[in-house]
Image (cartoon, rainbow, N blue to C red; front, side, top):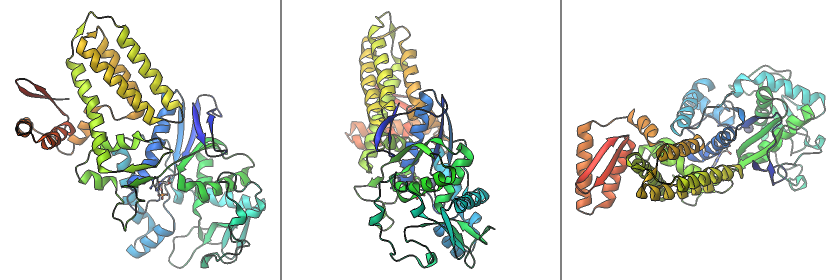
Length: 469
Ligand code: AMP
Ligand code: ZN
């Protein structure tokens, strides 16, 4: 399996430190608000990575941190007159809810920064002992000049970062403007933890260095995040961990490109900063959102539009329709060679696409070639055992995609409001009327509504039939 390593900027064969086992660290959310669909794009990429590793037979141990202490959180909690734990609790809750809605697998560890301050203090002390950190007033800074390797991930030209440039008021006392904070002395009214430098709180970067080491070891396999994490966050993590431990922190660094909306960067002022809740409130389907987030390779920007979401719906419907036909198709005493060829080609192409730096777009391409083939086979009559063979292929692909099982998604939607038989009859009748009056958009909307509730409609000459899937 090949992955694009940002460290060295090249495709590299994945070689785990321990055979058959991958230790993976993924930077998690800052829990000061509900995450937006951009954040979810990154978490989806990491879910595809995790599932692909498992698909290829690896055991995965993954940690994703929750940043639950940080400037924005402190300011917002102070404003709301609550402690940071009370302030962050609902955002932690909505984060896990969003992951579950999108079927992002739960990982082994979700460490919180506030519960690992002792580990961070220990690492800062070690950096002080090796001359990589120094105290200035109540704070501690990382001394970039003491780290010859600094910049190896991002390739940043340190001379471009002007020495002596204006520094933030709480960072006076730094030896060099480029140095970054490891420990911040507490200010009036701020949350604080005891330390050898007096009460204070950790900087953001040290969090991930300390927690990745605790859960995955001093050197682990893969470290991920969105492209904005590459510099300075990941560069600083490398500086801290490698200066403290004298060994590589992670062997592969993977970064996903950002999500934009209608070609623009998401921002509160443009009103395009959607959360998953915003999209679901508009009646959009979580399953289609997952599909859309999957459909673009992680190293390409994903431009989110409502049209693309509608396309995602149509793509899924092609699979659903084929499955419906498959369930009702007749198996005959036909030559199994054509189906075997199509199934084998699909399995090979799907696995190869994912092994090629998680090329989900190509994996979906292989899926639709297969869907097309199977539709042709159903027309001619499937060979004996054909249905089971096709379903097995789809089930295996869905271990990574987790979008193909319409029934499973419908069940989860149904929890929010199932339809009675009479309601379904009424909707099916309304759809037939819409079709008769050639209002196909309305007919499609009703079909989608039914499909979301786990109802499949089949059109025949003598009218439309439905069943719960
Ligand atoms: P944050 O809560 O800001 O630390 O972000 C959590 C994760 O979301 C990080 O890995 C970021 O790189 C990622 N992220 C932030 N904005 C976007 C975006 N617009 N598109 C994709 N990923 C993003
Ligand atoms: Zn991090």
